[in-house]
Image 1 (cartoon, helix red, strand yellow):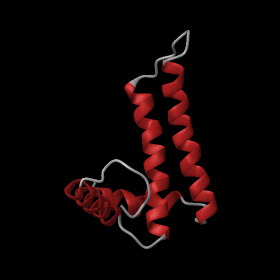
Image 2 (image 1 turned 180 degrees about the vertical axis):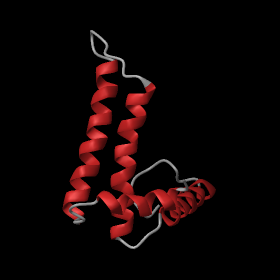
Image 3 (image 1 turned 135 degrees about the vertical axis):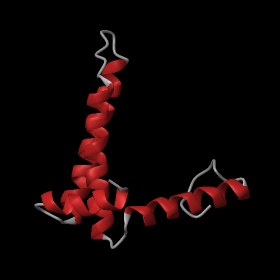
Length: 102
C-alpha cells in the first residue's frame, strides 16, 4: 500500500472529519506514544515492544492522513513540501533557530 492509498483508505473509518476532532486525535495519539517513551526511562522501566510502538505511530499516521485530506493535500504533497522546506533551510544554513519563515 502506498502512502496515498493509505490516506484514501483512512476515509473509511473517519466518523467525525472535523479539524478540531482530528487535531485532538492527533495530539492524543502522539501523547500516547510519548507516554510509552517516558515510561521507558522511569525508575522502574516499562519497555514497550517495537510492535506496540509501531501501532501507536500508525494511529498518529491515521490522524495525520485525515488532516491532510481535510486540507486538500495528498500525503505525498505533505512529504514533498517538508523535504523542500528542510532542504531550503539546510542550503541557507538555518536548520537551527526559531520561526516558520527562516
